[in-house]
Amino acid sequence: MLVKEHDELDALLREWKPPAPAEELDRRVAARYRAAVRRPLWREFWKLRISVPAPVLLAAVAAIVALVFWLRPTAARSMPAATPGTGSSLTAGGFQPLPNGEARVVPVSEVQR
Amino acid sequence: MERSPVEPITEGSLVRSARGGDEKAFLAIYHRHRDPVYRFAWRLTGFTAAAEDVTQECFLALVRGTAFDGERGTLRTYLFGIARNLVLRRLRISGREAEESAEAVAPVDVLADLLAAERAELVAGAVARLPLFQREAIVLFTYEEMSMEEIAAIVGAEVGAVKSRLRRARESLHAALAPLLARDAEGRCL
Image 1: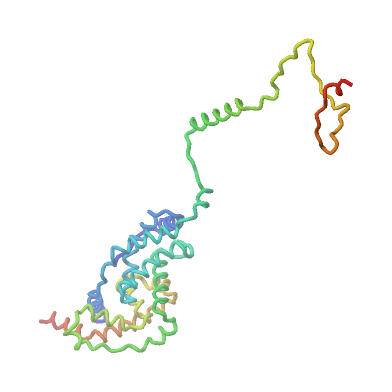
Image 2 (image 1 turned 30 degrees about the horizontal axis):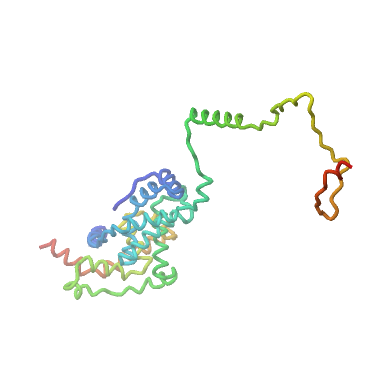
């Protein structure tokens, strides 16, 4: 009898059905989820991954090595040989700074003296 | 009613993926559990908008809150636990208040209401008049077909306490809806 009463009560209770949730709810939840899991761009940058096929990677490395070799410093280039019979030298012997930094024109006769 | 026979391990990995930003995993969880969570919230709050808000916050809490541990229970009971807390917060009612009002069940004038209201509305009114702890027990047991152990895990009480709440809820509902039940019995006899 008790079980039967319970069955009747259950049957009556089940007549109370909820309305369907609004379709807008799904869109709202999805939008809120995206906003919740979105990270700052700078944090995404550190997790950036690039997938490259091995042949492409090897070709790129070879190209970089070749470029570095071609652009290397040319300090060891040989200087052209001096013409026989001529020479040049520059020494600081007898150098005297101008007094007060004043420049003056020296005539040729004074120089020869 | 609508059970979701899914292995906890599968759901645990889905939750991890969802927490890591996998929207497909999140939507899989959401569509699997949306209706039960919504029904539960609706039957406790009595309002569509409130039930939708609770449903939304419940699934977002799964992503933002404490990580789900599949070894401590199923995802279903975990989600219902979150939804229950959200409803309690919404109703601004403490556990003590809900428990103390357990005996204060207002009688329903079924005969007077019968002329103006649908049977479902009478049932809704009778359930709504139950104290919260009894209401959630009857909703989880009758409408969501949960076991005593599952209900105890969700509401954070002993199985014995859940049985007691359920028995008192059924007694109150039986008394409140007695005229309807009697009419049903008469209808079958005729």
